[in-house]
Length: 202
Image (cartoon, rainbow, N blue to C red; front, side, top):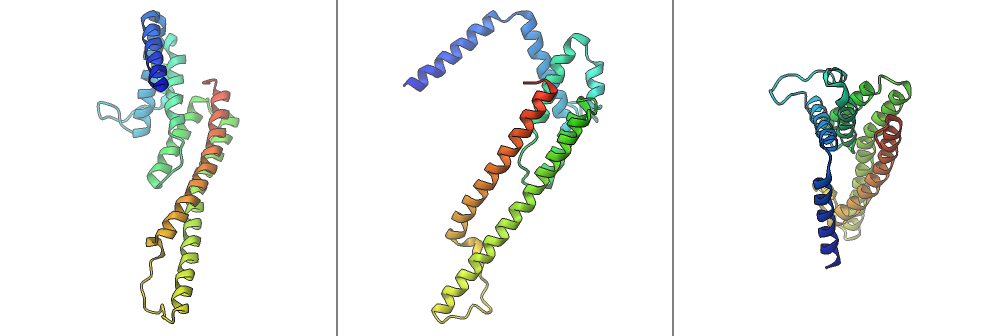
């Protein structure tokens, strides 16, 4: 019940703030959203009209001067959200594009470029580490299954054993993957915080 009440309090507070929001606040929020939209189009390589989006700096410089700070903030927020643990090649490409956008919005600052290159390496290493750990576990389980069969006097030769189908494998893999994800997420959070601080978007 306390949880419901606290959620209601938050909703009421937000409604009160919205009622008190100045035209400047609303304008800033709209500019931030515009920046988010421009960054999303940049990442997707497509504008709402279906054409190729311009570089982020070009979009920013073409915006009204008084909106540029909020638009840049919105762009960076969207780009930061797209630095995550990659599951496939497509995700890695998207991360690369997000990092490219961050470098561009930093004015190609050397320290930002170096941080983004490190981030690219870290996210690239994830898939390699994940595959290595999975393969090691698979081989371990294969040996265990073969040993159990041998103890029972059964030869595993010619048998198509898939250790990944074993509940024990799935349970152990879930634990290993969870730990690996936690370590990488922690590293990514540290980089994101450093970038936000350096770019002045905290």
